[in-house]
Length: 221
Image (tube, rainbow, N blue to C red; front, side, top):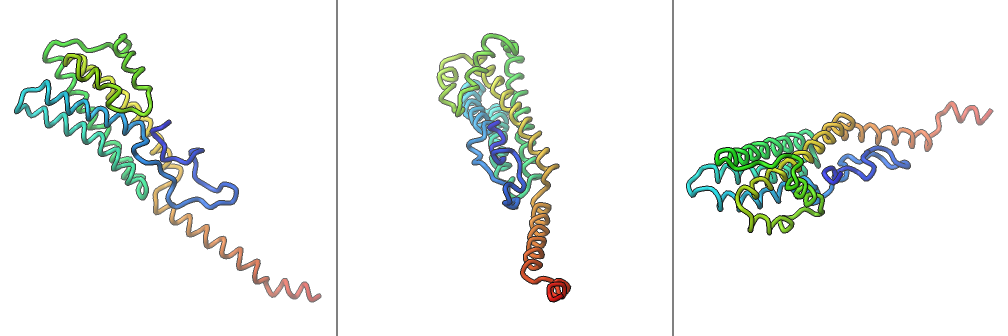
C-alpha cells in the first residue's frame, strides 16, 4: 500500500545478509503517501466549497477549512515525526483521522440541513468518484471540473466520498504503524538493540584477535 511507503521494501527491518538493523528505519517522503495526497485534495475542495457555498461570516467556513487543514498537516507532521518517534507518528495520524471525521460530519450537515440528497454508497455517482480515486498520483486537477461546474450538492457528495477514501487509507496506515511499533519498538528500544549488537560484535572481534591463554597452552602441548 502506498500509505505505508515509509516501510522498507519488504516491510521488515532486521538483519538481511549480515547487514545490521538500522536505528532509523527507511522513510518515504510524505508527499508520496496516498493518504496525504487525498487529504490535500480534500483540503483544496473544502477551501473552495466553504468560500463559495457558505454565507460570509458563517463560522463553519473557518471550522471546515481548519479541519481539512488539520487532516493534511497532521499526516505530514506524523510522517516526519516517525523518523524519531513512532508513538508521535501514531498520535498525529490519529489527530488527522479525527479532524477528517469532523469535516465529514460538516458536509453531511450541509446536505441534511438543506434537504439535499446524499449519494448511497454504491450509487453510480459514488462509484464514478471511486474510480477517479484510483488514479495516481491524486491531485485536485482530477476533480477540478466537477468542483467548478457542478452544484453544491454534487461537490459536497464528492468531498464525502473522498473523505471516506482518505479515512480508509489512514485506518490502514494506523494498523501498520501500530504493528510496526509492537514488533520494532521506538527509537530508544532500537538504540538499545543497536548498542547491544555493537558490543556483541566487538567482543567477538576481540576474541578472534586475542585467543585465550588456555588456547595457547593447548597449542604448545
